[in-house]
Image (cartoon, rainbow, N blue to C red; front, side, top):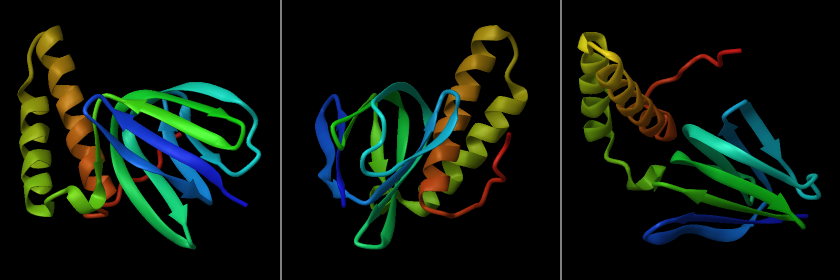
Length: 138
């Protein structure tokens, strides 16, 4: 049994197909979604989505948004999304290191918030390509 997954960004449809399982980051933690999941509307955090199709896992970096689960389908509206296959590993590593440095030297509320968001985006891109492994925090 499968469920239909649609991931839509403002400028394109990133994913639209039947999948077996989905794991994604919400504002309240990770959730797993299988066929016949209860209806749900949730805000998404910056993070990754793992998608199982034909027994194989794919990943994508999501830059925040909303997910709606209903009638064996999930629709995700995001600000931005990148499939792992679209991410340049070297560029992702460089962006992550730069974001770490910017976060460490950020001063003032606005600068810290912006640096933290840039760091979360860079971290999500790296997680999507499995370049580094982050422990799951509770």
